[in-house]
Structures are given as structure tokens and as C-alpha cells.
Amino acid sequence: MTDTLDRIEADWPAEASAAARRTAARYGPPDEAMPSRLVWHHARPWKRVVVNRDPVEHRFPQPHQDRVEGWIDLEVPREGTADLAAFNGSIRVERTRGELAASCDVEAVNFLAVNLAHDLITGRIGVDEARREYTEMVAAHLMGRAQPQTSGFAFQPLDAGAGTADEDEPVARHKVPTVAARSVGRPA
Image 1 (cartoon, helix red, strand yellow):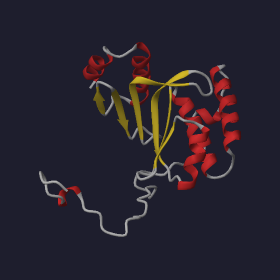
Image 2 (cartoon, one colour):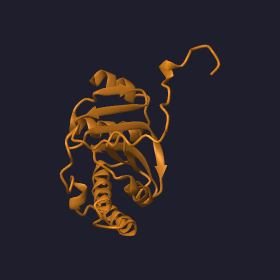
Image 3 (cartoon, helix red, strand yellow):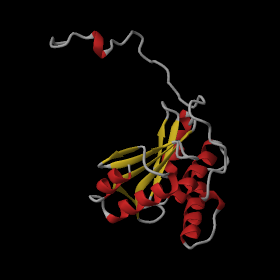
Image 4 (cartoon, helix red, strand yellow):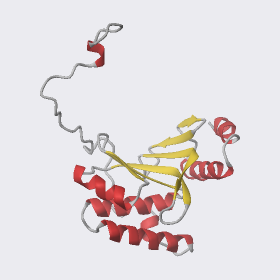
């Protein structure tokens, strides 16, 4: 996989290549390698880590490029998703899968984002407090001051398959036909 990693990274911007190298140094060779991203499954303590070639520009708490995603299994109640979106646009919730991700340019800041997301979901803090704490802790981390919230999870994430998925509820009063049940080639 190292040859594949070298080949893919040759076409990547320097920042993306550096992020991929840091991640590989920590978790070993990626499990999946595509021209646009590298994926590590079961990269403990994460469920999955993804390094993207192409960044997403993000201005909170200061301008940077989101490139590294850290995913965990976490049940997010439907009513909690709006608070997470208001807290940090780089938090992603896959409610149906029971997953939550944080994206940043630094893995340590992803730990912080997930820890504060958990605090929001559990009601320990509100959105404004989460944004303030995040801003203060990121600044301290970047100045080299150790922050416990950036070194790992402050809670115990669930193992994969631990029942975090939310299959949701049907709303249709009638059975909705599946794609396979429709006639192919004939107008509906």
C-alpha cells in the first residue's frame, strides 16, 4: 500500500500530502486509497479516518482548510442536529448510520470538536458556550498549551454496531414501490 500511497500523493497538494503522511505515521497504511481520498477503518479510537486531497475552506474559529475527518459511532437525537450545525459547520451527522464526524486540518482539533459535540448532545453546554470553548481551546492548542479535550475522547464512544443507528419512521400511508418493482423502459 505504500507504493499506492506514494503514487497518489505525488498528485496531491503539499498540505494534503503532509496530512496523509501524519495519518499514516499514526495508523499505518490506509485501507482504501483513491485519487481524491485515503481511508483508514478501525483507526482506534476512531471508527474511520479520512484524509481528503481537496480541502473545504472553513473560517471558524479562524480561516483554515478542513481536510482530515474523524468518524465515530454516536447516537444523535433528531432534535440535537440543529444545535450541532449551529455549533460547527464541520460537524457531520449521519443519523441513519448512527455516525458523527468532525473535519479539520488537525486531528487534535477533531477530538475537541467531537468532545464538545457530545457535550451539546448530552445537554452539558449550549451552542454559544461550545463555540466559545472551542475557540479558546483551539487558540491554546495552537500556542502549544496542552488541552485535555484535544488528546482524545472525554467520553467512551460506542463500538460499531452498538445500536446508534436511527432507521427513522415511515410517513407514507401506502407502500412506496421500490425501483425494482417498476417496469423498466415504460413510462410510469
